[in-house]
Length: 377
Image (cartoon, rainbow, N blue to C red; front, side, top):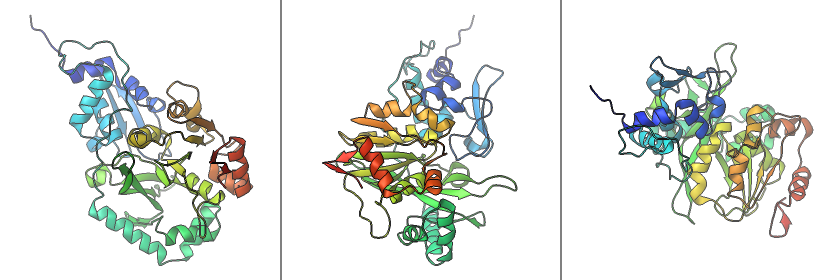
């Protein structure tokens, strides 16, 4: 009689199948046959998971996020999510499942694992070609002033604010497959505690869809086009490690609009000391943000969390033990959740009702969000 022994990875897959793994990683809302992809800004359901005939599980993204364009397993999902090697992803999977690395006998019962404590792998430097494309896109915008009016109109901003962002090189319009659209830089935090710095690693670009389809967002570099991908790190304005107040929104548009409306960002504005504004890229970017920034977390800070007014935004504060708001509650002195009632997001609210500096001041004062004795407007 022959005896089959499981490898640690096989034991991990048995103990923590892909649907439960995704739940553990904060991707539970994507663990179904048809869902929005957690790896790119998805306007349609291009992501799915399915059970194979042998009882194993696979995931696939029809927009090209899958490894080598083929369905991937749980280790591939971790490698993609955490921008790590396959070997490190396998070890991570084994750790999350609670399988001793040397156990080749059977899969033990699942155990909780501290998924945010592990220091992330250093993100690769921005490839020269990607850096050149970003720089050329910045120059393209700066040499064509009329584009600033279109950018301003798309967000409801004054043209002067769009011009400020372009002149400062905060926005680019790189050439992607013969077309140009707006892009924002992606940076990674690094250094030691007390001396955090950020390093550009790529950009997040809006891409026009095929005929009849809406635009989507994707990262450069990415696995399909460049041979390696970058994590969905957030858009960051102002201070982080020394912040006494962090305002967390979804996406770069909302963070820019909030900072402008508050009077903190723009031509002639002075950014308040001890304040940071974070734009989480996609509702599933929360785990990436926490993993990469946790070691630089500001002490004794307050947090104003402003989720989008849709179902994914509601999941940020839906009362689950591991929802984003509750995770922040273990890291901040106080967390106040403010929803954009009646509007999809902060930018829609701004366009419809003209969010002002006084409105932001009243909002912060209502939640006692101050540095020293001053409300931050």
